[in-house]
Image (cartoon, rainbow, N blue to C red; front, side):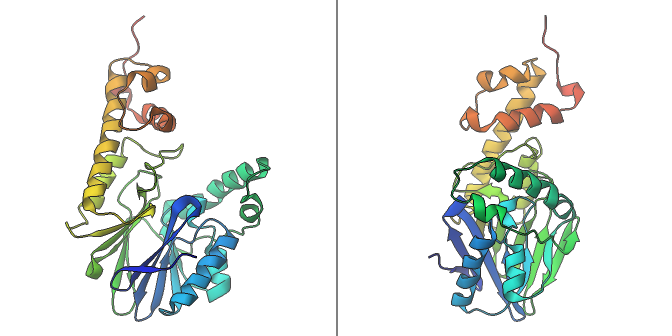
Length: 283
């Protein structure tokens, strides 16, 4: 059973084996803020029990770092277990939760042998209630927490959470440790590196960084991941500028990660390139 581990004063992280998801609690004199809520109602009940076992105070607010299901399918359970509370997200994430969840439900409905199928399909959506476009500060009583939309990357609606007095940054899926970040069909691979530049600007050399998935990392780890994402973006631009068609890009590029992880990255990158950066192949 995961424990909430205090990684900085009144900042606790629990790492759950399914999908290597991290759930974070930020404590203030007014109560606890939970960042992300896991991927099903059943798993959220486990998280709720872990919160009670920690005994650090009442849960008074939720944050969803983006619209993907593994970060918000526990919202309804948290409200059922702890009472009504604000659920914070970016405007984009709130507006696309239902569309993203529909794809997840359709996927799980079509597969019959996944052990998590029934619990995912049994989940009820609870949409974010408080949204913002650029940045907002939350008052936890004796400390302030900042929610910042640094730009597009993993999705168009990513946010990071900065806890200035503890020098902690929660990166959502803009930063992942358990696997390379997922560059999916709703990602922005050409913009992700500059988005991470802004995120890095929020850090000091001592910042504790909690990724959406995997173990706690530091600024150097994020810098390395930014370099890899930058190489991917520049490789896409270079290949397109030399007239390499999208269908041949994975084979011709020199990639920092397994090319099989980059099919969506290349497709999305080619889609997002301005016409002036694409050269038609010579015939």
